Image 1 (cartoon, rainbow, N blue to C red):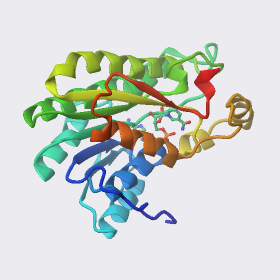
Image 2 (cartoon, rainbow, N blue to C red; image 1 turned 90 degrees about the horizontal axis):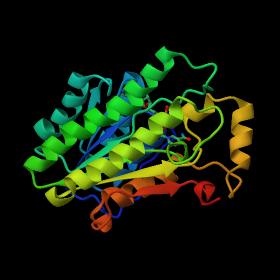
Image 3 (cartoon, rainbow, N blue to C red; image 1 turned 180 degrees about the horizontal axis):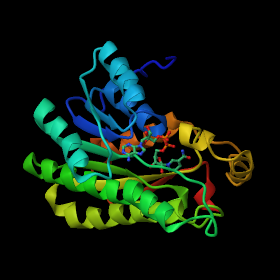
Image 4 (cartoon, rainbow, N blue to C red; image 1 turned 90 degrees about the vertical axis):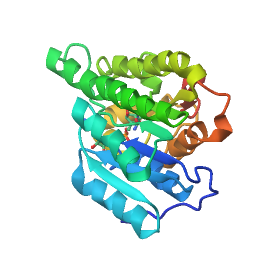
Length: 256
Ligand SMILES: NC(=O)c1ccc[n+]([C@@H]2O[C@H](COP(=O)([O-])OP(=O)(O)OC[C@H]3O[C@@H](n4cnc5c(N)ncnc54)[C@H](O)[C@@H]3O)[C@@H](O)[C@H]2O)c1
């Protein structure tokens, strides 16, 4: 484990946060950053071994952390992730609905089963965790939700006929929940990352990566921590008048 917690400025001091998909990639960077910023963090994932590494990193640096192994697409598991925050830390202030899968499937390759699987994890999983998080936040006066959309959730791309529509669901959940919850103290925003060097992206074909990299005006891929910093801003009280926003973190991709 080469990661160390970045130096924090207390931007989430005393907040309780749940991060889904925290074992790898963007979720892992976000959980480490949140802990460094003073949050008490519930880290959740289906990948138990890597989750234990993240839990150990945070606990080892003096942070307050609980880990829950579970599948966001399961109603009971999603409920248990939120309950871990309320039972363990007394409340929930922040949810980062990050867990997701990124298959590379074009329209002709994709099957009905592929579509259902991606929608179950990336769509239903986000819906369920947002639902149970909002329920908990309403009991303690409000909170902040940050969803993981994507450039694929804001514009069309080749080879993303299943994943792309699932990310439009993420942008849609963000806007609809933002309006529904706006007068009840809960802000709901999303980040729309460009292509980020995570475990999921490393599995994509060289051809896809080379093509998509060339489409980013900055001509490079982003890092998980660059996305985590944007998530931190939207999650924190610094973004107190921002709700329903889908913030590109994409090296200029969506500006074209
Ligand atoms: N990497 C990118 O280029 C990129 C770009 C835009 C958006 N995103 C979004 O960011 C999020 C994180 O992606 P990443 O690149 O860090 O991926 P990743 O594969 O590196 O990490 C995703 C994590 O989610 C977990 N996960 C998968 N299915 C799960 C389930 N059913 N229940 C609980 N956990 C589950 C995985 O075990 C993994 O730890 C996703 O929602 C993805 O769509 C990623």
